[in-house]
Length: 312
Image 1 (cartoon, rainbow, N blue to C red):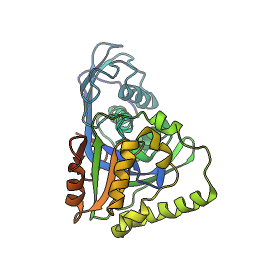
Image 2: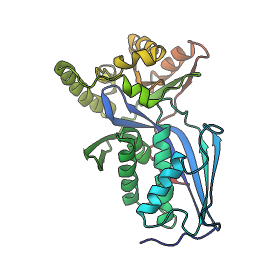
Image 3: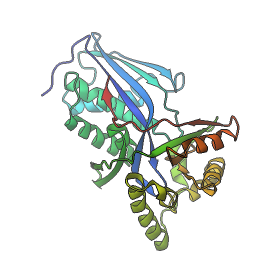
Image 4: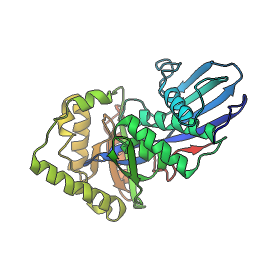
């Protein structure tokens, strides 16, 4: 059931960052991180009018019209709910961004999830049901083409997602072991376009590599949920990290340094951020090691939010 948007009504949502792949879980495994963007939309009485206000990351760089990613997905959700875009009303969209952009922390997925969440919440009259989250998950995964980041932003925690068809997204939500702690290392001044990172991947892989990757992906879920001591072995990868070395050699150097010290470091998403999956006992050791490298790295332990997209 839909309704005519009323001037003055508004909705705000909060969306976490995410890390994808986690080594061998390429395009399927995601982990929500405790860095958040917030998006708000207010209905205005001026038909056809759209304002896009940006704060934080991307301000002064991203478009402030219908081309903005949040606005694009907001429109998608409204139209899916039977409400014509700016038909008899206007919108003021405010984006407060703290997730680093083009860093491998799911900033675009968060924007997609946030825009869809705003739209479906407006359609619902200011509510988001579990069914709505499922709609957001599907629309976001289809928009991205791989639902690893977006599903983690929708649901929080640890997610494993797959697409049985090009328009269908399914997500399982294993329970993350309470001792697992993610440490995030963001290289200062380095950003990487996801399309470039994907362009260097080989179209085919050797059977032996596929077999090893399948085994490690299965082990990854076990290590994350049951036996964190296996994380170093569980995060080995043969499909994407080494092939991307040319586009982020500094990142790969950091991954190798940490792994040589026994820490389960991987490239976060498409990079160049490094994610280290460690334990409560060793988190300070990892943080101290990374900070000893100097100011070229921003090192944080953001935690893993149990909740993803939510109204605020």
